[in-house]
Length: 170
Image (cartoon, rainbow, N blue to C red; front, side):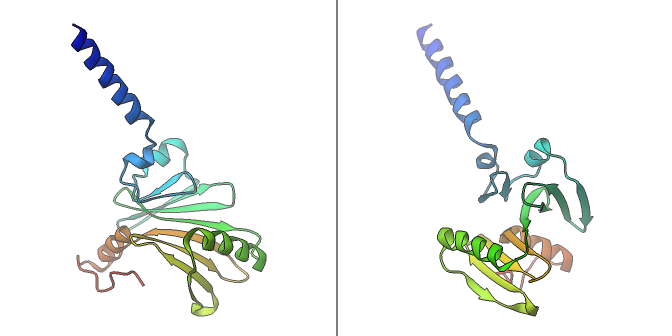
């Protein structure tokens, strides 16, 4: 009788511990973004807490736009898993860009910098995921988190074959 009671208490304790683990940690998450979105995680947890203001679908990719504190956050989903989280920041000024870049530099070190097509792009490659800070000068400053494995699958689906001649996603 005493053993059964101890077993039940142990099981209840384990269940309580499991339920205390955040949803993002239980779902295959490789990176929690903005305390809300999980690269590699299932989109259902996000949709259960907040309805998107816009949804679009193209091929095997679904894009959800959520109204968040900074501006809108755009989440790209491949087969139900979060592949990209992008957020815009205002005002679109050098000060905003520099502030964001410095915060990211403190977290991830020195970025790779490119200037494709009149844009400034700082990128921090973190293995399976990457962070990019993009400034289109007058139009937009975006912080983009990408889960590369899911991005490869989306590109492969668009091309119609399983191989990817560009595994780094550049």
